[in-house]
Image 1 (cartoon, rainbow, N blue to C red):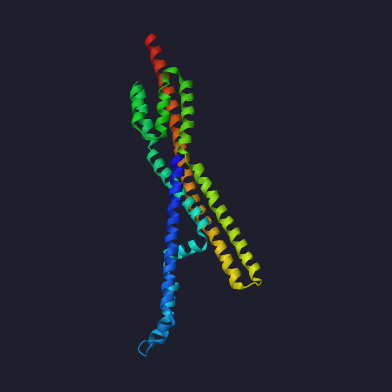
Image 2: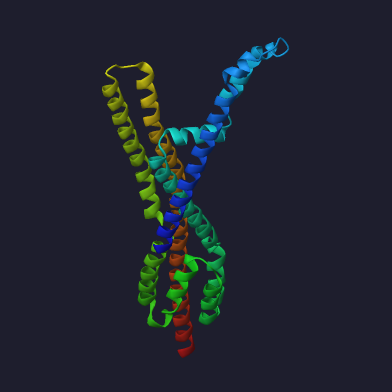
Length: 285
C-alpha cells in the first residue's frame, strides 16, 4: 500500500509539472503568433510578397490539421487539468496494476497435464519425496497446492483434501491480488469525469448569468469544455475494463486447471492406496 501511495503522489507531481510546461509552451506559441500578425508586417508588404496572402488559407489548414499529440494536449488543457490530471493518474495506476497482473499470471501458467503425469509416475513408484520435489521445482499455484496436499499423504486422503482446499483459497487470493484497486479505478474515472462536467456546466451557466445574455458561442464553448472530462473518464474506464476482463478470464483459467489437477491427484492417491492394499493382501495370502 505504501508503494502504491508513493507512486500515486509521484505521478501526480509529474502530471502537474507536465501541465505547467504545456501551458507555458502554449503561452509562448500565442505570443509568437501575435508578434507575427503585427500591423507592421502588413504595411511593409510589397508586390513581391503580395502572393503570400493567397497562401494564407493553406497555412490555416495546416494549423487546423494538428497532430494527434497536439489535439490531446489541447483537449487536456481545455478540460481543466485539475480533474484531467486525477483521471490520468487513475489510468496510469490502473495500467500499472494490469500489466503487473498479466506478467504474474503468465509466469504462473504451467502445463498441469504434464505436471500431473510426472506426479503420477513418481507416486506409482512409491517416491512421494520425489513427487514433492517436482512440485517445488514447478512454479505456479497448481504446483503449490499439490505440494501442500502431498505433505499430508501419511495422514490419509481426508487430510490431503483439507490441505488442498485451504491452500487453494490462499492461492486464489494471491491470483486476484490488485483486482480490487483496478475495479476502483474503473468506477472512479467516469465519476470524476461526470463531476468535472457538472462543475464545468455550473461555470458556463454562471458566465451566462453574469453576461445577462445567452450567446451561442458562450454556451457551446462551455458545454464543450465541460464534456471533455466525461470523454476522458469514459475512455479511461473502457481501457481498464478491457484489461480487467482479460485478467479475470486468466484467473478463471488458472483456477480451473488447478482444480482439475487436484482432482487428478486425489484419484491417483486413491488408486495407489488401493493397489498397495491389494498387494499387501496378496502377500499375506
